[in-house]
Image (cartoon, rainbow, N blue to C red; front, side, top):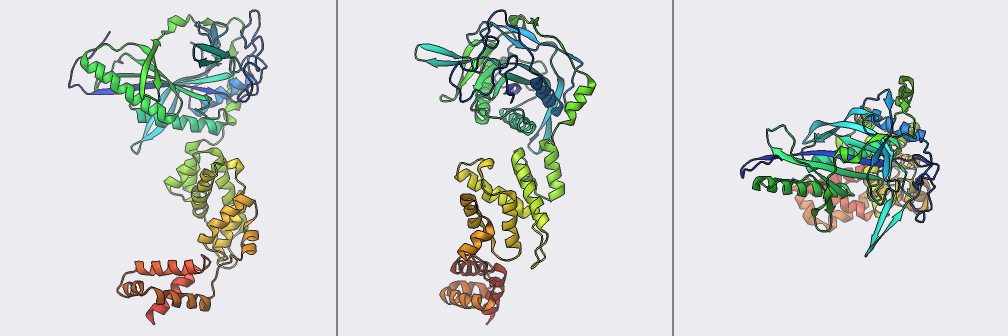
Length: 495
């Protein structure tokens, strides 16, 4: 066993990730049982096939194969002409058959990649394979006992295995965030790590900087959030470096992350491939993947996150920060685009001639919409404001009927009541005040009440004017036209 015994050696971390994603299918991988088991009572979504009874024959879920190939294509992977299923043998209590139907030497894809941005630079992480298998049952542990729930057994599970190209816990987190985003864009996985729909295991080792051979690796499990992945790998890296510097052998083992204690603990000796005694699944035929079929799947690929981000930058002239936020989720990107199209259908304001710009839509979506969703614990599907509703609201701002400061509470009421912006503005008398004579009266009162700000402005402090504008806006309950207020104040302050 290779050890590096030196106190002053600098080490680098080598990480590869194995991500398991439950596919969004109606039925399980090899039987007709419903795969929607989240709210079901234990052991109610089970049949002799997924229950591991002897003498039963599995049948392949065609959509699960298609979803796996689609994911592989999205990750730039190669699709072979031939694939097959294998039996992976191991005697765990959550595996009723004593083996798992998986893929070994003939998976559905090979040699893909995924890019992440690290310190402003693009880095490519190789993907060794994307393959398909069945999920295991779920063990529920109590004081002195363990129970088995077979509802999850046989659910289609896609495994995405990276190359050991990751060099830090932060890179591992970025990789996982990007992969989750792609899976959600494809519609093949919910991305919910807390519920176990997306699970991550990490193989991690350390070696002296400049060396090329891999060190002894450990596998880290039980990481159910991006935060847990980062913390667990940071801890495990430091643990291994400490052992290496002391000349203590690092054991190849499986370790579990204990979030409450902030450390990894040994669970069992890590298995090698030979321990699983793989052999071809005799009850399932091999898969012949024709080029025509693969191209049909490729044609179904949606616009992926990187392509959408690039298009938003070019087409809508957004900042990188805005575009990243708006494309982080596919449904949010679609909502934003629908709002932009709705503003364009309304045309320029008849009064001002201004067209609502995509930037104005982006500001409201990333600002007010996100704030309300967080405050009300809402998903986008639960928001009562439609993209067309936001477009109508922003059109009223462009036409000078209401100010931006008034638009924000109107937007909140739209979300609460489902009413339109014109309804709310008319019912509450919130139309913007642009009458110069009326605003002059208010401005004179503000000038009289804030002599110090007046003196500061006349002394050349432009910030004092902003303060006075704010006071006029407050006095008009946000309904004053900021442009008119600014003009009136400058005129009165010269008098």
